[in-house]
Image 1 (spheres, rainbow, N blue to C red):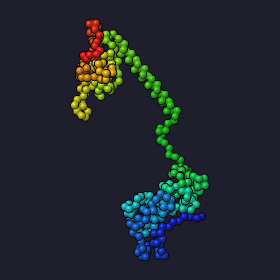
Image 2 (cartoon, rainbow, N blue to C red):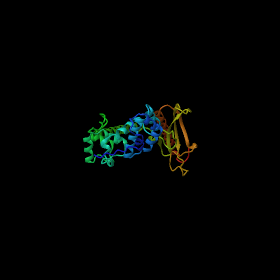
Image 3 (cartoon, rainbow, N blue to C red):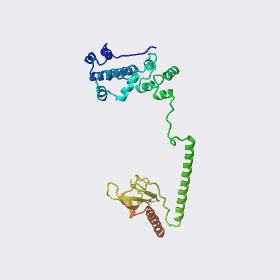
Image 4 (cartoon, rainbow, N blue to C red):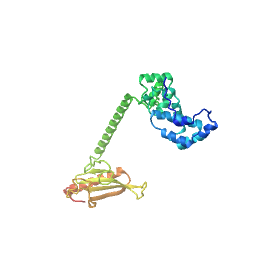
Length: 309
């Protein structure tokens, strides 16, 4: 079997007939700074370079004094001790260094290290089936080892049927809530049926009149608006109460465009301030609408639609 052994030139230069650690070897030894430079220069995402780095690390470990090898890794190399140990294991793996296999290996040291965990039979089988190739990932290596994928914790993975069933339950609950809202609105309309004025229909919050506007109820001549008021504090200002207003539409201003929220200060009539509940504020607004309607009926004069109150 042909193996690809790329012994670095620096290793060859320091190798000799004398046993490791002899005075002659120590005299010719490279410093840890030079070892670090050689290793860093060889550190590339290419399979031969990964082999070379592993071989250089092994040679430096054998040559440097006690403690210098670890100090070199911590202070002068672009990777840690754990990675260094894995790179040395990659460089020492015979079935990876086989010249026939090298062109088909992934150029990532993490995946190469996973391949060192395979038995010879597992590696040969993966190579013959084409599973081992330059684009393979760690998960493919784990599959060759026969490792099952990590199981999802119970309760985290749910079937489509379960999700569909829950979706149906939520839709049914939403329909029930809509029916309850409709019933409450019908009851409120029935409660106000005896009023002489129009039944106010309160619309969405945050209207264009004010960023603090809570709810509004349009009428033929304008809109009733309920606005929450707060104290002057910048953080968590205290709630003072609701302010009930009536805003008259400026029909003489083309910019208004029948928009009850487009108003001048002289078109805003404050009915009451400091109201402590939204329900009470709605009642006050409805009572004002009833009173204005009764006054208009008594004088047989319709409520003004073009002038401000």
